[in-house]
Image (cartoon, rainbow, N blue to C red; front, side, top):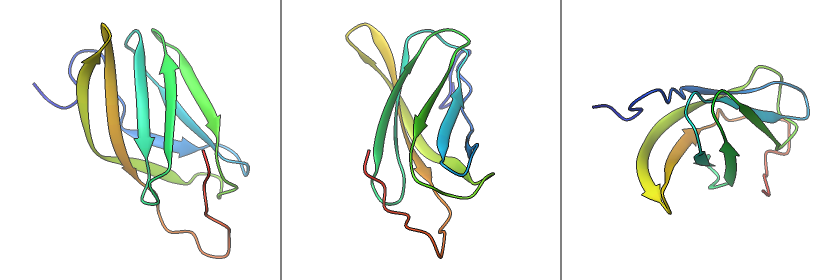
Length: 100
């Protein structure tokens, strides 16, 4: 049994636009994702089966990827909670301060 057991498969967050969105696609019901980057920014997104969520963050470059570094799956109030830590590449020339 690995970190992403069952149908849940989250491997990469990708910024889709200049005004960045964290996009995630899950294939598991009732999962809450809590992600924090190197600057300890925290975001929570709830999804249901085969849905995707997006949360505005900072104006980073299109195509920037946040890769999952570590994570843990736990049960919270009969829901599965996936808490992950993601690593954001350092971006120069932009205000990378995130307040979520």
